[in-house]
Amino acid sequence: MEDKDVNIVNVHKARQYALKLLSYRGRSERELEGRLRKKGFPENVVSSTIRYLKHTGLIDDRALAEALKREAMTTKLLSQYNAKMLMLNRGIPKEIVNSMFILNGGNEDMANAEKLVEKKLRSIRNLSEEKINRRLYNLLLRKGYSYDTIKGVLKKKNFKED
Image 1 (tube, helix red, strand yellow):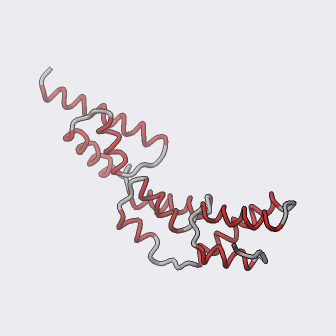
Image 2 (cartoon, helix red, strand yellow; image 1 turned 30 degrees about the horizontal axis):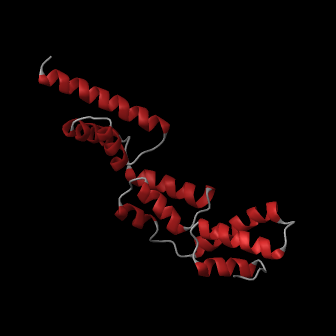
Image 3 (cartoon, one colour; image 1 turned 120 degrees about the horizontal axis):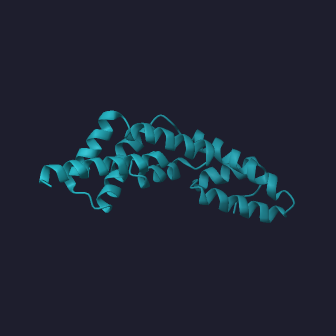
């Protein structure tokens, strides 16, 4: 085979592999580039595949960031900080991540922390107040909430903060 034929075959294989990856879940441009490189595709094939996927609308970092934010904030009840970290770890550019959180204040964090506490309280009601307080505090810390938010939520729920 000629070099041109090999390149066409590589481009086809790279596109098929990228489509397979995208069928599992949404991926960022950077994440797909990394996976294609790891698979051993040449740089020109990787860039051609990424251009193709962007042109067809299969890769859209802004749409992926919105979906990840919605999942992190409503389903996982993460703090804004942890939601940002989730997006950055998935390869979303920092500018896009920051633009997703510009309009929101800390109110969303407080509301999410309260929902999380309510949800957790259902399963730990029988424990002593000290244990409940400790478990709620540690849960909120793991989810990325600030000390001030944790203190405010626990005070609102009539628990003393550590």
